[in-house]
Length: 187
Image 1: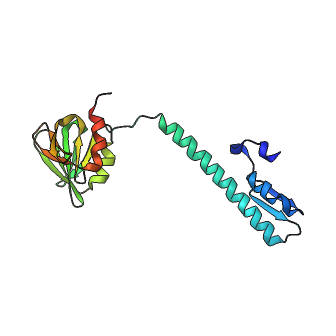
Image 2: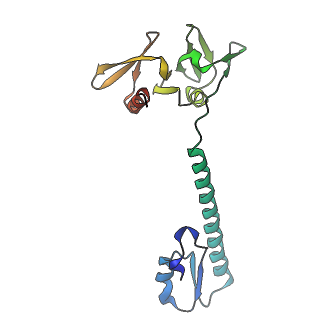
Image 3: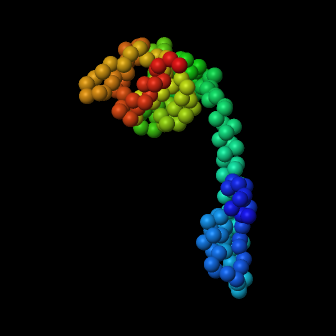
């Protein structure tokens, strides 16, 4: 009977019997535990603890699956304005103003379209998360670029590429980031 239940909808089952010969069949049907009579309180508590863990894991898996399915249909939200602290001021930028971002230890340098640069006390990874991956992409360990500011990719030899931005900036494309090339191809 237990084997006929749908795998994802089975309750936490503990078999209690005086017959050890059915143990393999019980675990084959995904039993949580198998108590062989006679058993003591400690063994019963262990079986109940396993059942509780099983139920908790099932609930967590169900919740994770529901959250992932809901998030799968949600487009990534990009910020309309970015607030950055630089030189004792709060600067409000539209992401479109950023051409590329350079890592500098625990700081980042924003290179803007108007040729200004702003130094921020924020890591490149942290800033990359705030910018999102729809319009920006990391090209190597030290640089994130705005995708629509890429003018061309030049083959540099040995299968390596150099990313050339509209303002003439040249950045090496790391081999680990070659998958990023797909973002440049329209639809």
